[in-house]
Structure formats: C-alpha cells, structure tokens
Length: 262
Image 1: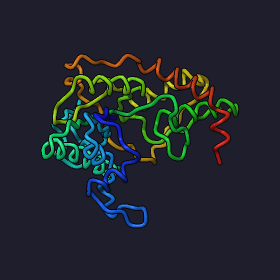
Image 2: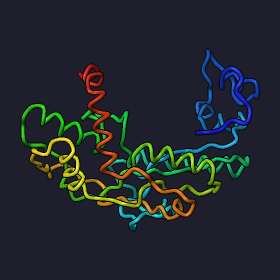
Image 3: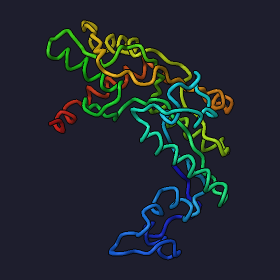
Image 4: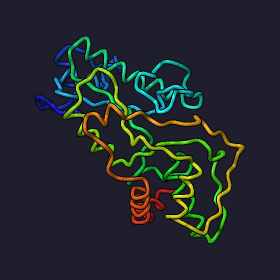
C-alpha cells in the first residue's frame, strides 16, 4: 500500500532501466531482487509504503499477548518457519531502505484474517473459511458429523478483513515509526469455541468431532495491540457479526465457487 509522489511513466521495468538500476536481457531483469515492490517504491519516490507481514513471524512460545519486541527472540513455529522467515525479511528490508535512503516505509503485522473473498478451498484454506465450508457442506448433505483437525485447544485471534483495511488507512495517516506494529483485536478464543460459534451460525444441528491425530500448531497466538490503540484505532466488527457477514457472502457466491471446484 503506497501513495506516489509522482506518477509512474509507462512501467517499472522501463523506469529502472532508465535509471541504470538494472539491465534487461531478453525482456527480463538480471537482478530479480531489484524488481520487488519495495525497491520499485524507492525508485519512483513513493511518499509512503506500508508492508504487511503476518503474526507467524513471532516465536512459537512467545509470552502472551505478543509484543512487537519479541521478534527474533526465540524459535519459530517449525510448521511455518519458511513463510515466517520471508515475512521477517520484508520487515528488515523496509527498515534498511528507511535507514539507508530515508524512505518512509512502515510495516504492520496483522493477526489471522477472514472475511469476504477468502479462500474456501478445503485443501488450502485457513481455519475460518474451512469451518464455514465444512459445516455448510455437512448440512446440505444432511449429515451430522463435522471433523475438525487437532484438539480444539489452541487459541487464536481473528480480525475481519474490513477492520484490517481500516487499520491500514489509519496507520498510513498516523504511523511513522521504524518498528513494525501489530494489528489485531487483542481478543482470542479457542478453536473449539470458534467451531461452536460457526456451528451456531451455519448448521446448529451438527456434531463436532476433533481429530487429535492432526497437529495443533502454536498453542496460543494473541497480539499485543496497545501501541495501535494508543494511535486511536480499534476494530469495529466483532467476531460473531463478522462470521455472519462472511457466511452470507459465501452463500451469495457459492455457485461461482463451485464452478471452480475440481
């Protein structure tokens, strides 16, 4: 997310070539790292850039709620450390451009997101869309049992995507710090309680069965959002209302999603 000081002329590759930042070979840059959004923002004098990471950047056993200064103080969750390392690299990249070139690049770390246009594919979706789809499909079949991976004990925090968008705009207007900042609700619940909530909304007659042969992942992941609250921002959409709205969106778009299903 960025606001340009001057409009781009034609495309980024042409601009970079003019500035001598890299050379083109058969239409492709030799230095792929120079084609990142961050570097393009630097080349085009973007006034401000907001980089979004994920809360998986924090260590597995982080003290709860997780403060920003706990970054790189311990071991990452092994099941997603590759993704986490990539996100951490983005934070450090923004910091380095800020320190070396004076770029106004900031970083924000959202908690778990959900909402309209989410990925509802059971093979690759996250927990909220997966639960919505599972309960809906079970109800449509007339079955009773919904199987959920893990014990249901891990606790997670969830933020509606419209809350995130609003928070990002607030940060673009009010945040200028070198450090990354957490974006979340400051509230969490167990996966078991989340499943019960989705069941109430989608298919109250379902019976939940937890498959404890599956991994739970990080025991708890709740972000400390005190710094964000100090800037005057808090989330507006509560979890139940957000889940209800997300399920309505899912029903409205079910036919087009089914067309893309294998």
